[in-house]
Structure formats: C-alpha cells, structure tokens
Image (tube, rainbow, N blue to C red; front, side):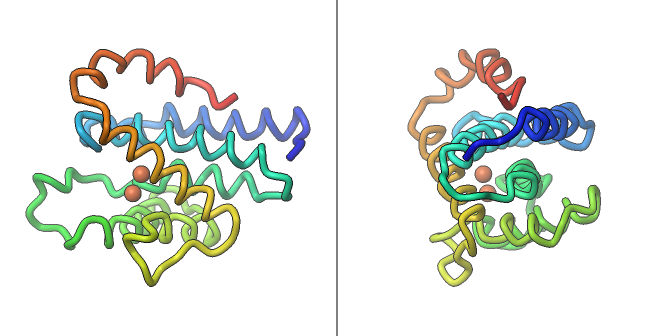
Length: 170
Ligand SMILES: [Fe+2]
Ligand SMILES: [Fe+2]
C-alpha cells in the first residue's frame, strides 16, 4: 500500500511520541520472553506490523493499527511475580492492556478491539476481526517466537542494537 510522505511523517510522529513517553518507558522494567522486556518486544512488534501493513495491497487503517500495536501488551505488571492478577495471563492481559490504554491515553474503540484479539489462537473464541487485527496477531506471534528461541545471553548482548532498531518507525 502506497502512502503519502505526509501520512508517513504523521505515523512517525505518533511513534516517536509514544516511544519516549514516560508511561510507555515503564514497560522497560517489565520482563518479557526469555530476558527480553515488554518495551523492546512491543516496538519490535510495531515495526513488523507496519512493514507487513505497507506490503499489503489493501487500504488499511494504519493509524489505529499503529496505536493498537504500541499498546497491545500495555498490561503494566510482571505477570511472573505479581500474585494478585487474573489467570491465565495469556487470556486476560489483552483486555487489561486495552483498558489501561483507554484509561491513560483514551485510545479508540477500534484500537482496543485489535488489542483484545491479539492472543489468538490462545484465546480461541476471541479471533482477530479484520485485516489489521490479523496483522497485529501474526506479528506478535512471530516476534514472541523468535524471542523465545534466542537465549538470554544473546538478547542481553543485542540490547543496544534492538534499541537502535526501534529508534525510528521508518
Ligand atoms: Fe500479548
Ligand atoms: Fe506481545
């Protein structure tokens, strides 16, 4: 899908705003798969999502998709050490992330819906609806899989490279 320079700049601006936002930076403290953290994981997913979306021949809602990707894991707690949390994590965190994003940034209903379905097929009865939601779900699965397959040592060594990689959307 071809987009204008103006639209590209506007997406980059939104990306940069959230990348440096105090509330989002807190995700750096939350561990993700095998030594990764939720901040790096999140923006890796965002970049993959945008790459996929721009390759699509369909007209997509990139703005809502971008926001949904940024907040898809905005659940804000370490699920391994937090005792008082809904279980299982895989089922509940999409709903918690969507509610937190609505509370802190008043994100759109459409973005919230995409967030809530990103764990399919884990949440089997809650599949992604629409092309954008499917792109987010697939990108998240792929990034999580790669993170799970590489060692903690490898990720620690690459942390600066990851931060460099996610420093820009385009
Ligand atoms: Fe997730
Ligand atoms: Fe994720």
